[in-house]
Length: 416
Image 1: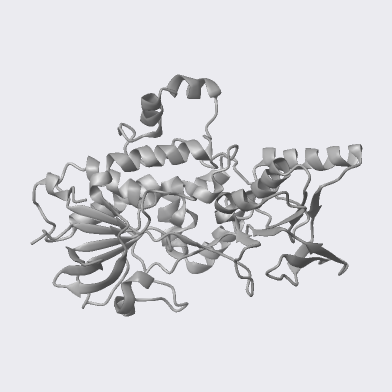
Image 2: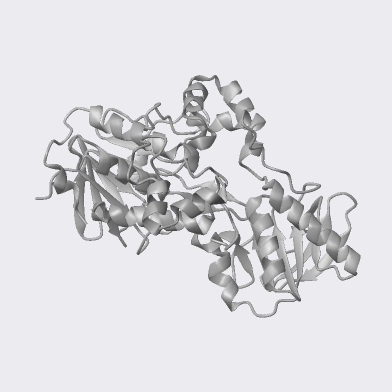
């Protein structure tokens, strides 16, 4: 019979990848296994545009804030790839997104023995002091589960993705089939929307590209030194202890550090393009501010409506891309009936302890931990890379402090 795991990780994006690395580096013996539906590691592959850069420092990688000496750091990755000196000479804290994805893949390969790809957890039930997971035809027992099920694409109510209507997460997956479009519409005011506008404007030099957003213009991200303290590990403690009204204020004050904002360099580049086209008398980059998209049909027909004066501009779009963000996936949906034993607050949100453990009834004796879906308790870094390295260390420490942790040889944890 397979040994009882200390932890079973559900989902294997950057968060649980960082946890797998923490397990690998842990001196105490840990039995861990991670299950991922995808056939291989992947993180927002549809938006790995060639010029897109990370919006967090490379020092906020999978390990450095937890263990600066880790062999899994971004700097160690650069050394192995032969680019360390080149990166240093580049004098840039923010790598290309494609490069950071390659770093993730490099790290995932090094802990591949802990991961089962193409493995979907179909159900979880309580079993003794922990849980039994149904994974394909296999029953896996674990004392704790760590849910990192990620985010879901958000589309406006009534809008359905189709041949001509995409969410930006699928941009690179779908664009190869798009030939010589005449009109492209991009909805949204955040970084992904601005990147998509620039991408289409570059890729299709004959197309009119319409950016549609309710604001007066793209708003710059606040990445100033003091504002960035909202991402500090200490800020999680402060946020967790704060009264509910203070939490709401803090999220409101600092939403512009992360949500619906655009890098200043990209804003300036798009403005230069618009102005240049006005000068040469051929304008094909059209930004519709204080506007919304209405009357959207599956065939691409739509109307850009001004919120200011009600003016309407019909468009027969070859493709409409909604860069309208993501919403947290219900973190306990995978639990099935077990979710009924997870306690919730007066607003229906999960109760979560400081160590990211869901509060459950006494009939659930194992630990259920969340990576994501904890903004209401832990703040803005709930699903962001900024605090991932520290968060996984806290979760692992909590699991290992619990009674009856398995103390078998560490090599047994490498179950593939």
